Length: 295
Image (cartoon, rainbow, N blue to C red; front, side, top):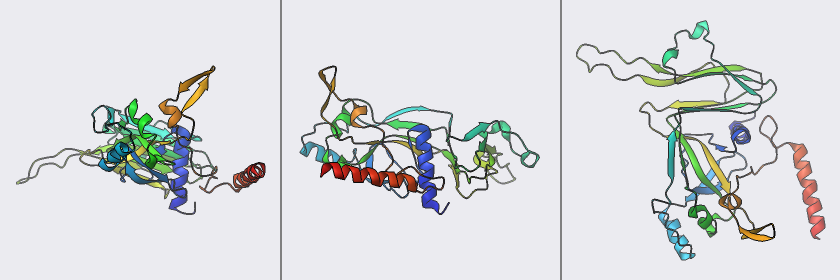
């Protein structure tokens, strides 16, 4: 793979295919519920331009005659329960049980919060995303999305409707060699008390892995703070009619109609994250035919 830019876009695309959600290639960069902006078509990353919960956006809504108070508790982001762990993998990746090898016998696997092995298909890129104890936050269903849909600021923009934050993450993009990797989130023993020093302390978590590829990112917050955002839901404002026809009757559009899951702003990618030239040729042919019909 040529560079980190291609790796970012390929990883995001693979996770999107597996989950219909958008991966954050750089999880320490905060993504918040209500963020909106555009997608960088080269990296796949969201370029945030604002947030619907900002005071300035609320003022603009009132000036546009869109009377919804986003500061009301019923409109504020809702938090779900904390999951133990979430493990996602793309097609062509098989997850297996962690097998202890002699060289890693020192691991304290009894205390491991996560342990897994993955077998990747040779000649094909595969992606793995692991989130430790993720917490989901989301825009509550109801009046928020159906109202802000009409805001001029969100025209042709992408909107973050939910996020997954966590205190520890592991992301990996395979190198097409058909490799097999193992990972574990283990607790190291607390530092024993010494004479004249404050005793003990708590065990700290850290990732162990035998992966050697360049496209590996992992981190754990030692204090357990939810400071990483590896995954989020991204919607795109749909240009459509105010209502739709169903069995001869006009039916108001739902939030899912107004805000469908976004599709990537690139053609299908090859294994190295570049737009497949075959699909680009197809796109140009379709564009030529479309222009011919219009003329």
